[in-house]
Length: 319
Ligand code: UT7
Image (tube, rainbow, N blue to C red):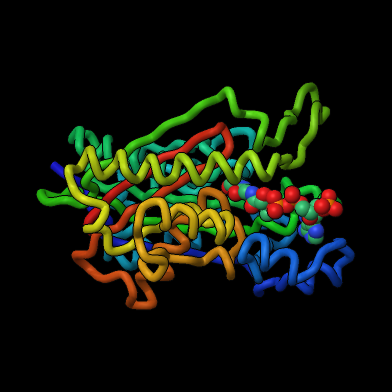
């Protein structure tokens, strides 16, 4: 028993916001600085009151339509998010209600920017165990809600969005291999170190990051995870048609491709138009590339995540 992606969808809220627009809004930055350090030119930002489950709903409807099935046909819903609508219930349960599904297993996965790769791997294991037949796996984030808009070192980097896939049981792959890792010793280099206690926000409710430490960590583990995944699947990295790493910074994507000896024209890049959308970045990039006709049926794809925790992982699949 294998699992196979049968439908993909995505959603970006509002119009694209350019780097110059951020500068016009009073952030001490420039298009030149952001573009040259990160490759980011645009991001989308949710409206006030627009939540992760709202974004997830749009992406999920598209994915279900692409798979040719209805929400009631899904028996597993996993939402990867670090910006849930509520402390509880889970965003997956809220999405389930909005979709009109009742009775499916539904829960969130919290692995920050590795969230989608974690969620897809979990769904694959559920399906391969035989307990579930059809999963909706979503990455949805409103990082704009947890950004300190007075901190130019972080607020220019992130955007909001959602991506979703339908993953179904199949007698042929599908997902060939996956690998997930974490090292909590590095939790402080990327975190939102606050919480709510007795009605009061305690600690810091905004995203904080040691950008250079994250950069070095990401480049190292993305290449390692991809190699490991290929070893598990017993395939050569040269058989990969498309590499879709988490979209944080163009320089991280370039360095990863270089380390893996994969030419840059085989790397799907959306960070320039989306910014870093955390758990949504990989399915957003995948959906765009499929809809543009770049990724075609039968091609081999490596998906990769890396982010707060620290967490990282990879999923190798035949599309
Ligand atoms: O999902 C994972 C999430 N995060 C990442 O992947 C981020 C990984 N890290 C990075 O992408 C890079 O480290 C950054 C893009 C965050 C920063 O690039 P950097 O080349 O490491 O810059 P830096 O932090 O060393 O800052 C260089 C200068 C500083 O000024 P001084 O001290 O040299 O005068 C900063 O204050 O750039 C300044 N700076 C800015 N200037 C204009 C920092 N942010 C900005 C800004 N606009 N937005």
